[in-house]
Image (cartoon, rainbow, N blue to C red; front, side, top):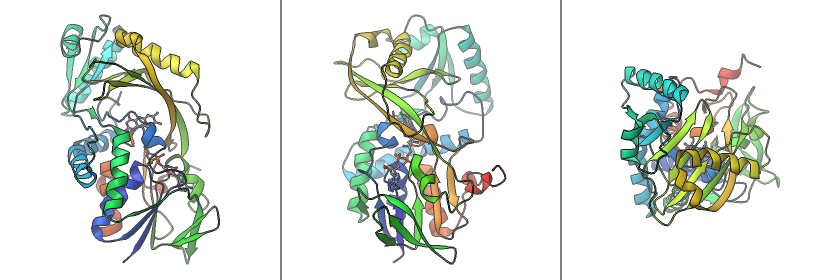
Length: 374
Ligand SMILES: Cc1cc2nc3c(=O)[nH]c(=O)nc-3n(C[C@H](O)[C@H](O)[C@H](O)COP(=O)(O)OP(=O)(O)OC[C@H]3O[C@@H](n4cnc5c(N)ncnc54)[C@H](O)[C@@H]3O)c2cc1C
């Protein structure tokens, strides 16, 4: 049985490991801290394949494909783990608070329609019929009924259990510092304590830290952390059903209502290295933007604040593919959309490892695209 080592037990590593096990590999995930507690835990869990985009780019098709795989993906992980991950194809609203927003969202509606995507442009009145808690100041907005959310913290718990149940090993509190290579082929990994693990295939899914491990081996492999601060409020009754994506051209916030009436609000985008901070300024800016959209939020108490690192490549696209080192595979740099992109990434890596096939959807995501951009 071939041995696979997966570095990093976030949503990407855990999803890949789960699907690869169907092909009868001996799989070990190695995690430097506790499994599932970094970006994948910090996220809001939005599946914003349409709402996230201000302009069309090919990457949007990739996001939509993954969103359309989400129901089956959650059903399978729920069945394997016994945990309900609260996937909801709830629909997502992008509100316009002024005429500039409205102009932008009208154009957005047009290009999405021209691509054949399902989307509606609604008046303020129509939007408040769907979500009565939205501010009277909202003049219009977009409604994407196929976008939604998952409770990413529950999903992480479920993935960990599902992996263990099918016989994948998860080794925690073990940091990988480098690779073992022979004749340009990977033969294992070594830890910061100089322990070694042999492997036939190594998959680096270490998110924001991934290039710290494999950078010396792979020219121009670079992933950096972009900090996002988050805050949640607790309501004692349901306030919203839909996800409210109140951000236009990167300005604004989002509101994600969970089943237990917790309301997740986000977020900041800060390029400040690996310092995991939560600041009064950051949290207040999120609260202010979200209160403007749903005034009733002002009455609610803060339940929790936290932050996490989104893994970003310099062109903001994922890095998924083989490398110049035989049997060293990368699946990282999912930026703002790693929760959304877990199903399609797992499928793509499964095809790569088991059939040596590069799915057309990932043909532009190889790390070699950076070779001429040093
Ligand atoms: C505030 C915030 C909000 C977000 N909201 C959304 C959202 O609504 N929707 C969405 O789709 N995406 C969202 N994202 C993005 C998404 O969370 C990430 O893209 C995704 O979680 C990345 O998954 P990952 O498995 O690659 O990384 P991670 O979850 O960070 O996992 C990587 C793992 O590797 C481990 N590791 C690192 N180095 C080593 C090493 N040397 N040895 C062993 N283990 C190592 C880490 O400890 C970590 O557990 C958000 C992110 C943040 C921070």
